Amino acid sequence: MKISADFIFKKTCRLCAFAVLIFISAFFVQLALSSSEAWKEFGLDFIVSGKWNPVTEEFGALNAILGTLITTLIALSVALPLAFALALFIADAPEIIAKPLAHAIDLLASIPSVIYGMWGLFVICPVMQNIVQPFLIETLHFGKIPFFGTQGNGFGFLTAGLILAVMVLPYICAVMRDVFKMTPPMLRESAFGIGCTRFEAAKDIIVKYGKRGILGGIFIGLGRALGETMAVLFVIGNFMGAPSSLMGSGTTIASTIANNFAEADGLHKSALFALGLILLAMSLFIQAVSQYYLHKTDANSN
Image (tube, rainbow, N blue to C red):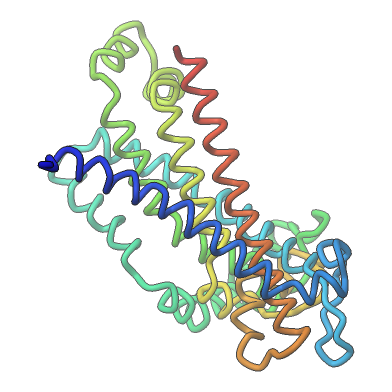
């Protein structure tokens, strides 16, 4: 029996597809088994408890979960407008300007996260402590805003969020840039022809035409920020208490695991595996939501 190349290609693709499902299932099984001791000891209270004391063996994931969500929201709030503006500018700029700028932004994605962390520790933290935070609190009076904070030492959620924003910016910008370039020139020229401004053409034509791609870019940035470890570990302060303000120190799931895993043992180690399981579940949930919205958007466009 002669086996055709098409048959081999088909079976190989099917095997790769099933391998992805097997790997994801294996991650869940391994984390579930390794964290079983923590789940038996604390149950679902582990998720809603803010305690973290290795001495008394009391552990909870709430503070790490909140820190992860806070830094991710800050990162997306800063990165999305910048990525949108940069992508729109690059899509319409002359080639002599657009090409070097696009390459420069893409190079940001190739910088290792530990370099971002060192840059944040030695450059951004002093700038935040001596210039940015005093300006925000004393000049703009942001300290009156609830949860913003009235003092800071340069470390904390705000600094970590800004570092993450720089890290996710090239991913979101790259996707948006390609989406904007795929918008038919006829649509934009028609919008300009009826008197639309550039902002109106971008809002009503370009964004609506490429909303599936834009959503995809946003979720890529969200997934990148959610699990970042080293850059956040350097600048967030690694305080295991409950988040008190954006200026205050805290922790995330990934930084907690990286900061504690080397000396962890027994129940402590099991609690860290439980945190890893929660982070994996959060990532897959975001991917599921993104696929749902992309599918819904595609259905509505048809």
